[in-house]
Image (tube, rainbow, N blue to C red; front, side):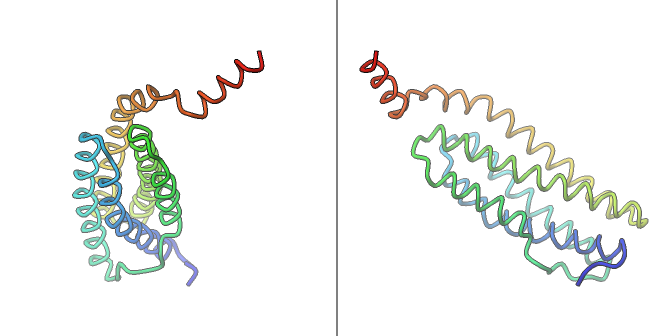
Length: 180
């Protein structure tokens, strides 16, 4: 069904966010398992709990609206998560893998920030002040998660860069020597 009013669009966006949160709840344990940095694992575990709370907030909003949270699959989040999973599973170097996990997690956070900002604006326009407050709370949590990931990246990316003399670079260097 195509939305024909701002309220219908709002409900559709909330359903999209709810499905995205459900997908994240399922994906985070795999990211946690793939991570090697204890700080990254701890941060992802913490965000898993926060994500469950965010899904509960959305359920509260749906209840007040008299709507069901179930809807179509969030194809955007599905794509972001699949892209991240495909990237991470092919990386052997643990530091580089952790850096890739952070990059993937930040893409998730940015997607969510866009969605929550939009939904909050719709809630405000529709006079749904309680919902707007809940959506703003979640938006702030997503921003905090992104900030924490950025801080972790500063440390983890150094470790990933320290191993930059990969086999392909070594091969390139030795072939340059032969040519010269």
